[in-house]
Image (cartoon, rainbow, N blue to C red; front, side, top):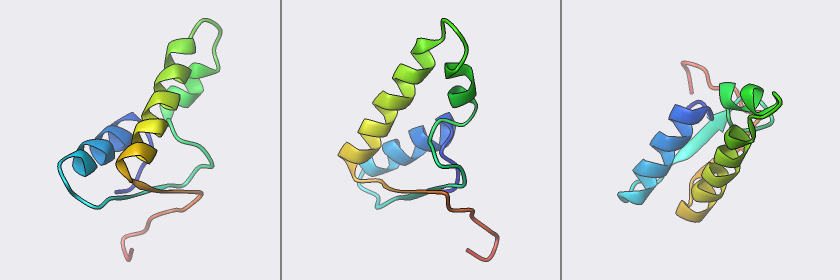
Length: 75
């Protein structure tokens, strides 16, 4: 899967929970996408908490997360 934003993280976690092997590529050096931007704003700790929780879920379910990796059509 390509994209470590909220939708990509959720799709990767759900896919592993039903038995698929999943690799998740994110071009940035962190997960969260637009949530990561929102988490930096004052009073938006909920976004940061969700990214942390989802990152732990990905690790627990065995998603192979690659940060800083840009996916192309050839990949």
